[in-house]
Amino acid sequence: MEKVALITGGTRGIGLGIARHLASEGYALALNGVRPIEAVREPLEALRGRGIDVEYIAADISDRAERTRLVRETLAVFGRITVLVNNAGVAPAVRADLLEAAEDSYLRLMETNLRGPHFLTQSVARHMLADQAKQPTDEFGDPLPLPDALDARRAIRRAIVFITSVSANVASVNRGDYCIAKAGLSMSARLWSVRLADAGIPVYEVRPGIVSTDMTAAVREHYDRLIADGLLLDGRWGTPDDVGRAVAALVRGDVPYATGAILTLDGGMTVPRL
Image 1: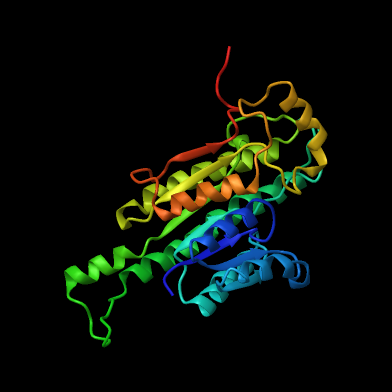
Image 2: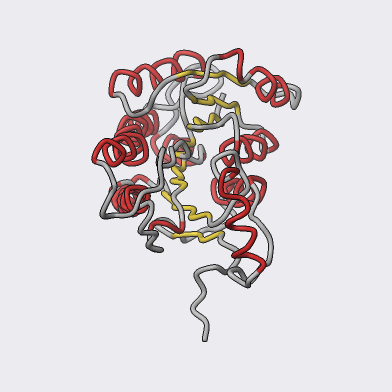
């Protein structure tokens, strides 16, 4: 099995949109979340209906032991990870002004939105490098000659994608903890792109804007008004499908010569205008 994607937060919202598109690309899917299996059976079965292998692994990426278990269980089932999509994240429980924001909210967001994906990437990158270094064999189990072996190792396309947010560079003073976490995650993506470049493993950052998910449902009316008032060049909400299409193009290799790049999917929200 050569194409295996581990997607955190992969059973709803943006993560599910990504999972659907990678399923269409023939990826076996290891989907991670924190909900019990009973709560995610419907999307899992829908994805399996596409003829691909799907495994759900409940684990909290903010916890080191849980992250370790997530990687080990994924490898036990599929044998390798060729694509990692760092998508899981949480919103502030309360949108609070900077003068009133609590440290517990800040710590919660840093643990899940920044530390978790950064060190999950460390674990998966170590596996990718070790997997890439294995000596490939021919159909009879004999080691391939060195040039052929190098070609075989490179033929398996590996990639890592960080899903951040326009909040990485757009300040919202009533959810500063979220902005700080996403800004840090953006730098994590850049750091990993540099570290893994020599191995030919591209790392990308996808930076969505206002996307219609359960996370944004509570502020729907607020953003509806902003969109109606011209906040976006494309006057509509983004969708998980928009993000899924972009991630599929990146991991497929449709955007070459671009490791370390930031792909902003915000409907033109951050385009400077007069």
